[in-house]
Image 1: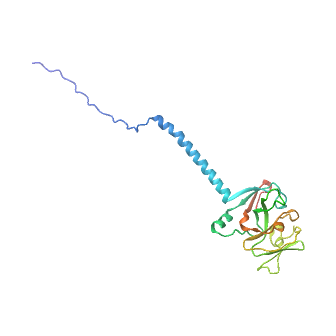
Image 2 (image 1 turned 30 degrees about the horizontal axis):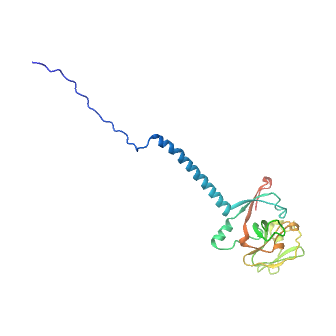
Length: 225
């Protein structure tokens, strides 16, 4: 009787699952990375530029003084920051932007070809008269009449910008004007060398660009207003 030769059992075959692929090689994934980074960088730069434009248009802006009309408060080539948000908000709400008496504002004035080579110019001056005020010059001083001061007052003395009158300048001119509901009267601090409302009259509220808040240069004279 033949004895059968023992046969080793065949080891079981196992099937390892293969990873599923999307049909794109790894090289395609590597190529898409730089494009995503480029688009992201472009998006960041575009957003930053848009934010900068919005800030300059509606919130604040830098200016440089040109000329001596605001000496000795401001000097030629001083670098300033102008706050525009109150004017922006006033326009959104449909109301005129009226600054406070004594504020220094930047505004656009037209019809200046007689004085400058251009017809339109941005000027910086101090607000002396507010809507409803009667502004006069008597004995080389501003005298303002309104409901609160029927006998008149001198803002150069009552407000602190000239140290309550201790550094009072001589104010020349022939002025007697009553301001409308959206008008202000502006004047340079260097009264003997300033083109202001004594020359071109009151300005309208919609001509105002913003209010001076900080002088940043020269750094030694940096100051908030």
